[in-house]
Figure 1 (tube, helix red, strand yellow):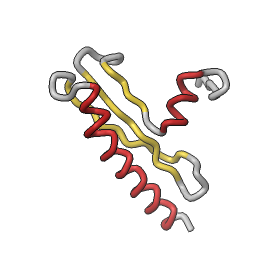
Figure 2: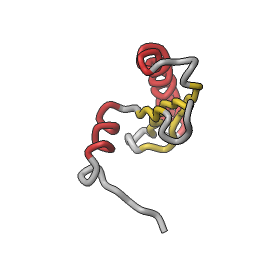
Figure 3: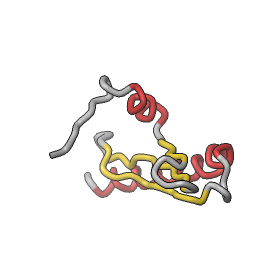
Figure 4: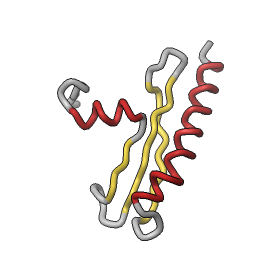
Length: 88
């Protein structure tokens, strides 16, 4: 059975939804840093997500923010735009 949590019930999920990306910093596995961003369809619904993972020794949290997140968001926007065209 799935557990469904609404944005109203989780301030953290609401914050992630508002900023448009999420970071996992060694929460799942020591040494693993990941950042994810949603891919939207033409209605704005989330249909997929992109994720980039790296070892914590290679990228600091600041480097994730400054280097990886902007590229990830640009790619997610481009895929969202492509998805909007395909689903017309």
